[in-house]
Every structure is written in C-alpha cells, then in structure tokens.
Image (cartoon, rainbow, N blue to C red; front, top):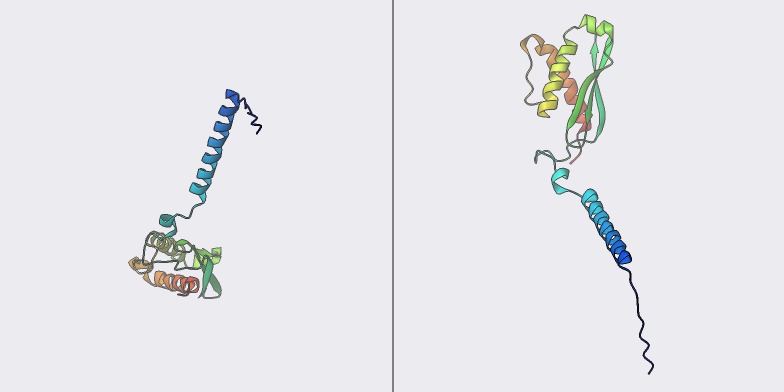
Length: 148
C-alpha cells in the first residue's frame, strides 16, 4: 500500500476569517428566528374574554337629521376599536345641531379608552344626542363583529 500523506497548510488569517463569517451567519440565523417567530404574548388580546371580536375594517351607520344624513364611521382592528368619527359633518349640520360634534368627541374618547359601549356615560345636557350617536356606533359595531 502506498500511503501518501497530504499536508495541508492553513494560514491563521484564513481560519480567523472563516470563524468570523461563521459567527456572523449564526447571528443572522438567530436574528431571523427572533424577529419572525410567532410570539404568543403579542398575539393574544389584552382582555382574554375579547378574542378576535371584530373583522378589521371601517364600518358605518347613518343618522338622519332633518334633511341631512350623517355617517358615524367606526374603524376596528381584530381586537380593538381604533377610531370613531362623524363623516361628513357639513357646516349646515354643525350650525343646526351644535351638540352633535362635541358629544361625538366625548363619546369617541370614552369608547377608545374603554373599548366598550357599556361603560360610556353621557353628560346631562347631551343625553339625547349622545344616545342617538351611541345607537349609531352600536349598529356599526354590530356590522364589524366576527361570527363565532
């Protein structure tokens, strides 16, 4: 048998470069796993009783005031209400019904804070306007509710 011995000469510079690139590759793979993994804590809603309760989108309900029609638009994500607004609120409606816009701003702030219509309170001087607006918001949210 002819046993030929092979001698491999490695330079220290090549070994260091290989180790650095292998370390960077491992770091990159770890970064991808960390960034793109499905995190259970962030995918669960903050309120356990409220699991994906809405279909994301913009939903509206209309209110008829004299000859004008106002749309109450509610924007929702999968598990929260993101905005509540009146669209379009013309100058004539704002002049004829001056309590509509401040009542909606007050209700929108409460709804976005509580994420519920049950704990919303109405001011005494705006109770009829607020109840009309709350009914419209409730109709819009009924359209947004996910079927279980």
